[in-house]
Length: 377
Image 1 (cartoon, rainbow, N blue to C red):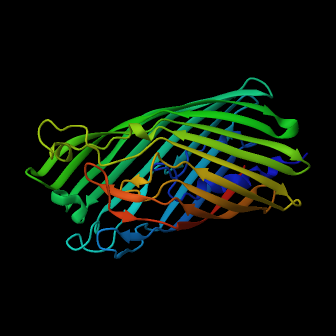
Image 2: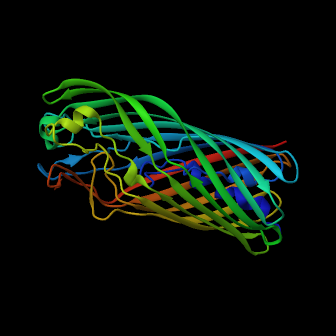
């Protein structure tokens, strides 16, 4: 059974993300550590969301709030000996590019925006006890920055509020284990990514009563658990899939000025409103000949308890289908590519206490495309 050469066609799940659970962009993959021999991989993805709605106060349309975005990653793996290997991964684990069109003076949510950028550097080692069992783990250094604006009449006295969070880097860790049966291309790998707490220098402007506030905001990037599996099901045919859980309920963004707007006894207010997410994917890969392989996968990204969501993330769950292909240029170079269509779940952006729906976002979608170049040495 020759299925090893088609496993890379599943890469598009990490190369192309369209409003995945929480702020997920890359899914924090570690698959390169399981590649044969020594390899360097470069992955690039592009996503074009179409996320528009209706202002419930005025009935006016809300134009596309989802800005196009790119993702990129670099990974390298070196096999020291039969037992020990090492990998280094640079990726963008989290992100957001949401901007509401229109003036904050004449619309409910105009000029509201959330821009989040991140970069992670992960160093991993893997030790194989035998052909079946192995463990992997290492350290991750992660950088995050963000800028959030609340705009429009729906925010009342907070209309025009802005918080700028300067970039901060902190350490976390990764640990996991895998079971394999090479003769049938079976692999089940479980990987835990620790939470990482950042202290972000913060400047808030247009804060009611307080004006400009300078402080440090503690923000926790969520812990997560990835389960990845694959197995040969026929000659040159591979079944693969994944489950990812991320504890986004621990991601609280509560800068000093925003937290105190309601008075000195009001604490715990958060600019974010994220729920824990569980995302699933399953697909089939097929090797057609010595040069070409292909894959198809479907996925589901969990929705929240109800359709009321933060205006900073105006979708609720998603379903998608991904088509991928791989071409073996020669024994050292492989090129993979793919396209994904995502249907984004309907949602109602809300503000206020009690929660009041301000917009209706329905029938939205995103198109993603990506490629990967792998070089074996």
